Image (cartoon, rainbow, N blue to C red; front, side, top):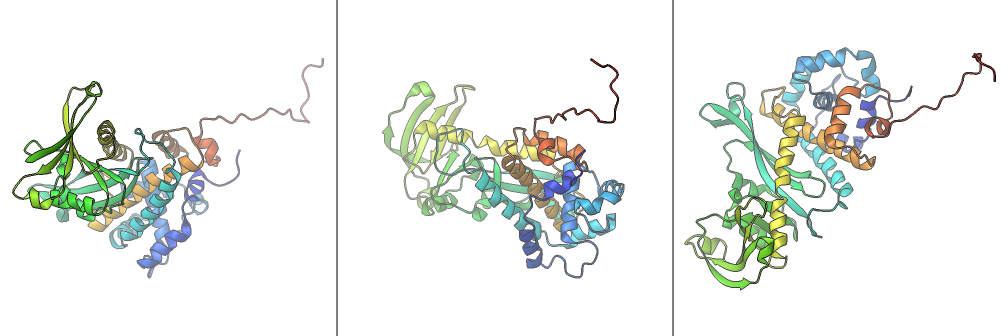
Length: 389
């Protein structure tokens, strides 16, 4: 049997502890703290994410049942439900948001060499939002509708590796298009968005920032065609036009030409009309790039199924944001481990294994890889042989 560290400790060894300490120091997270540090809080919440705990009491019971192992797993503090609840409520959520940003930057470097489903050298992103429903009676600060509470997760993912590189948590009332005001724009990069983000004044900021957007046009778009380019209709393309907006407001909000591409999906037969400010890429490439936008929907589905962001351990705004950011950190950490160890398993399979083996003393690569280590049989020297040949 392996006599080394617990699998949980091996996994957390991939965390940059110095960077974590800087984030804690920046927001004075450990101010007047004696027995339960921010690192203890992070490790307890990470344990809850990895093992699918349902409540603070569940976390307390499970961890205290392995009290003799906690020190060697890295948890030094005293585990109590009230202590963890107060930490989630009072310690600044920006500690874990900044730390998640550090992990994201590390993960993006690891996945920078991955290929896209389209032949594109530039960076490509997908931007969308998802709504997390909350009980209005328990979360009165998150009023969404008259009898419903919610928060929105506005997420930008890098299509190379599906790594979330920007996340903005807002109230459920916030219109999706307003999230564009918080979006960091990278010159030369492509941003694929649904037509819910069409606001030509905000899209013109992409043009000024030398970034490219790809979105769908609305049916009531008022425009005039300036030029046409030939297309291969056997690929599903129907037209490739240069247009200018003619609406009373849009003509001033977006005063430069746009590119409109009409496309029929060969699989579904659905007619789609795309708008972009890029005039260089092939029209079919623009259509394929928009299709990649679906990766952000799969990301939302994945984290809702495999991480604890639908049921929360605290009811305050700080506790909700803390839990979301630690959940994102766990997702990115598993992605980092998968890449650095060159594992063939999917993130889902890795999480399933970790949920059962966190306190086993198995080497992390052996536990998570698909290779089964076979122990070589060596006969004991003090054991007699039954048969002599």
